[in-house]
Image 1 (cartoon, one colour):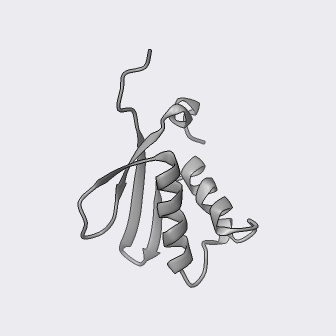
Image 2: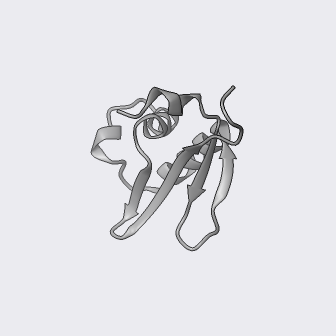
Image 3: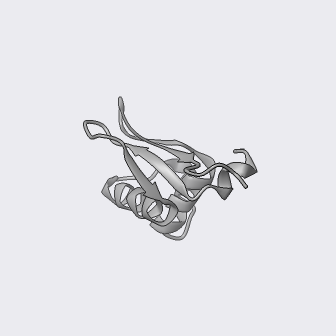
Length: 86
């Protein structure tokens, strides 16, 4: 499981194949992940038991940092801290 300190981060860098990196806040990262999950014909097995795409996106955000769209093509996201901790 990921470090609980990461959950305190509100920003993410997201990487898509062929595009420059983007900095997104947590809400926009969830929207970004939800969009990509909707493009998939079949969700990964560990996400199929969830009630909706938004729940699947939240689980990914909480437990993973990549999503394979097709063999050799993956999305990645990483929690970042833009300001030093207080």
